[in-house]
Length: 451
Image (cartoon, rainbow, N blue to C red):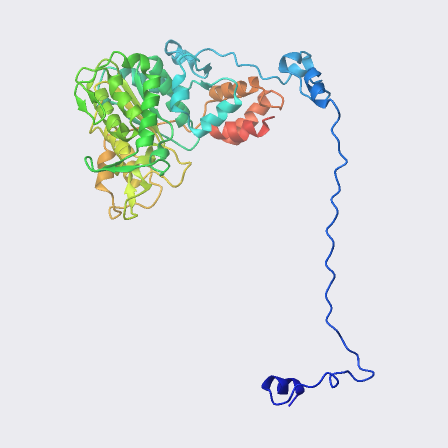
């Protein structure tokens, strides 16, 4: 047993101090402790502000612009600076009286005073990118543009039941531009216009929603409120002469029969939770009035026939036609509800593969199916009903040479292209794109953009 164990168990007596003395020659290691470090002395900063510096700031004049500060644009008068200066495009104005067959293949600028629809309703993403690069919002009138405007002129005096068009065609053929031209034409012709440039936002769960037990649908209060504001802004002059034909008792305010229709719109604008109900009531009022024709235009129209990304309380996907606003649009598209005077326009898009055109819509429009189809493939009866009566309005797949030349000249005048101007370069870009409008602009011309 070692001495340490014996001492712990108490079996041996504690040795005396003499017995603990280390023998000669033994190395004894004593436990030592470090001396605590002394705190460092504080050294005062030697930096001293310049005396009277505050007074110098007050007496100092304007700062010298210096060598590396940019000069204002109006001071760059030398021709070398003007060569790349992007001036405003000087184009003929887009007016209804000028939109005839003689205006085909010409670039026209949208008027600033009558282009509030572009600012209020917004633009599709691809058109918005183009207008950020161009100095003036404009478009090239095509043969198909004149045909669509002729259809609107005929629809101005008849029910929307007779004019329910859906723009179809290959990706990039110009469906969104065609719809924008139709919307701008309708605004200038004093149509009550409601334009939804991004229909996918109605079903992609990007806005709040709430269930309404009265209609057994889901309302989108925030989106409906914004849509009411935009509709009132674009059509403010025409709405002044319209009145409601039915009373609407809301909890916050009652809109009596014969009151201005703007009073009904203001209820939805001021009280967001009432906006879906007010928007549905506004559709009824617009359908009954006969003073002005009404245009309802929806881009990304195929998204309204797809399953939405909203969820019910059991986390099941909500069908698009169970949302109040998409259902109202589908009812006007299918003819279940009609405007006394007016038309409905829709445009298909294939950019977002999440919301592809379903089989029911494809068969109704007479388009070639994108997948296998046979009588045993299930069809939803609700979608078949909502797709009935739609007319396929095919947009040409290719630009004509004259139309492409006008687009080429447009971007050349904007000084967005840094290659030399010439027929050989134009024909090479047109051939590379195969005549497709989007490919011609994006991959043919904008690859050479000099920012």
